[in-house]
Length: 167
Image (cartoon, rainbow, N blue to C red):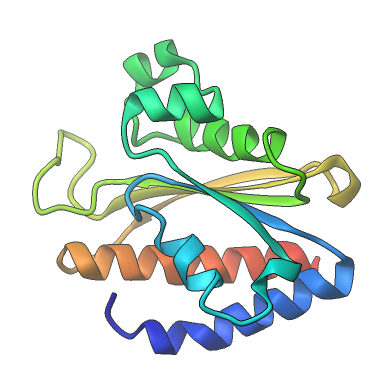
């Protein structure tokens, strides 16, 4: 991944925020294929705060591993607010963590559909009840090639996690 070294300060901040609150993290990734988890675990000592990553690239994996309703995927598409919210909640429910992040998107170069061009990414953060029980989702429209879209997704996910863990 391009400039993965530049993401290490974000990982440090996330680690500090999670450690300060005694929190742990799980990831549920589609378009990034595990890059958020890989970036987090580049940091020595990440086992203190990183629990697990779910790579759910296929629709079947989203259903089997995270409990995303297949009918929702069929109706709304894998790249949708409903699916990313279900992914985040599924990761939170299946791991002993306080925070979960989920991403699903179209990194390109193909895969675009009407209303969902290349670079469309949905990101969600779910917090356990003890951490406020919040669930937020946002649509990102990122530019560049496949690698750039994936790298930007990781960077935004780390920043949103820092915000959530600090709050």
